[in-house]
Image (tube, rainbow, N blue to C red; front, side, top):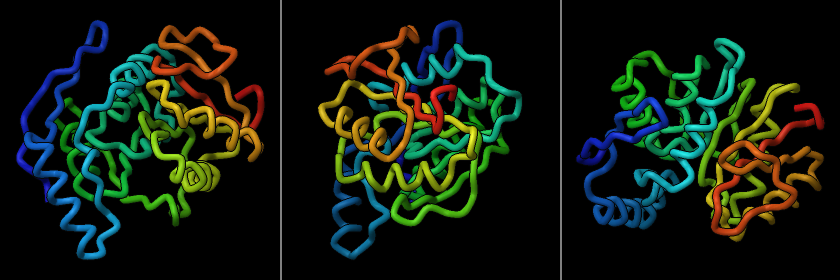
Length: 218
């Protein structure tokens, strides 16, 4: 069920995105705890927050020229900002999250910004569906190291052979663990700052963009 919302505007350089976000984070926490008590895994008290890395990730998505109508999936979409940037950049974006309400809100936010036909998909990283995409987008999904292996499993299952993954991160302490795990799993990982300058190592408490591909040319 979609909670009560409020509307905000997120500036992205010369553009802006209108977003509906949950109005009461405390109520979301209570609802998530109640769901967990009833054995519902599809809960997350934080999906409705606009996390720090999301606007920076969205700006970088808009700064790149993408293949027209490239099939993209936003992983852990929350309110959908990165995916909406993908739509604005000309990609065919599907919003995905473990929480059905997040998928619904992301789709409604896409419609609010002129994209009424964006698809949505409830995805459990422990059991990713057999569909694949050219581009996977995500932001602020590396905070819990317990999710790194399921995330990599999902990336492996849902990314086309020559596709790429963009993950915006706020310089969290667990990001280097994810990078190391990805590299050990055979992924080529590049790290960039918010100006798309290449970095030689992960940052700490500073935005970084991780780009994963199966080859160094990705």
